Length: 267
Ligand SMILES: Nc1ncnc2c1ncn2[C@@H]1O[C@H](COP(=O)(O)OP(=O)(O)OP(=O)(O)O)[C@@H](O)[C@H]1O
Image 1 (cartoon, rainbow, N blue to C red):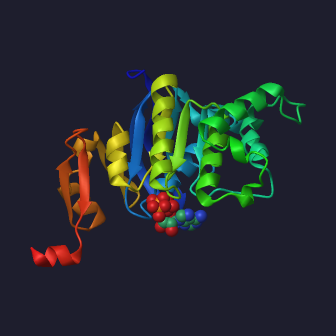
Image 2: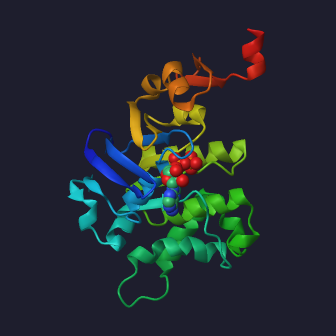
Image 3: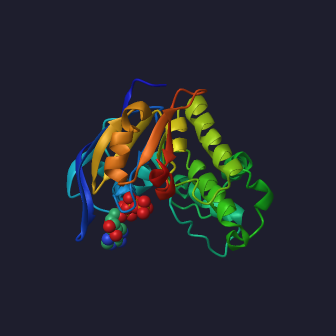
């Protein structure tokens, strides 16, 4: 699925009076699985708010399949791009109704309720994310990890071409971290879903992403394959913490080890 120009951001800027992302430029091929890494407050979520249109652009442009994102209505944008936010906006609604909200961009003008096809699609993605067994529970009755999986199901029922995920594994235990990432990888490989996710775990980023964008202080300071980005010089420089980088003997990908003060002193 690789090769075709799909999503381009050129010299993009957006932000708040006290913080601005600027000079953001990257290009994703269709079917890529890209990760955004970088320290807290470096602007990763701000970029997602710019892409989804909740923050207006201050300069630059974003193109999806060669068309300016700004020229698309929010409804059309939501049919192409779905986002799983960092915090789930859980409410007093059932899991099934929450997931079905992802179908709203497809409702016709005078449609107020979901169709049987919407329900089928919701069931498919609830099963894939292992949330189907909770479908009649209230969102507020789920654990943080279960809510996160329901949020992923809601984004998938939008049937987007580009899926943005803001720290999708942050509430998940290791089993569910790997299951969700494997599911995203499967959707990526089998359906050509392009994935762009913010992820703090550098080793999961290394293992799953074919491409990394490293953010620091509102800019992209490095981008490329995990091998090129996850070098100890780059990580120490950006994160200001000592690390050791080795190669995973099974996958050949870089692995980052953190170094404690005690370990440093014993050297
Ligand atoms: N609504 C807002 N109004 C004003 N400033 C904001 C707002 N949201 C975020 N910021 C500021 O913008 C900067 C970047 O925030 P952002 O959430 O994009 O960082 P991040 O890289 O996603 O961080 P984290 O890894 O902690 O989630 C921070 O300094 C933050 O305080």
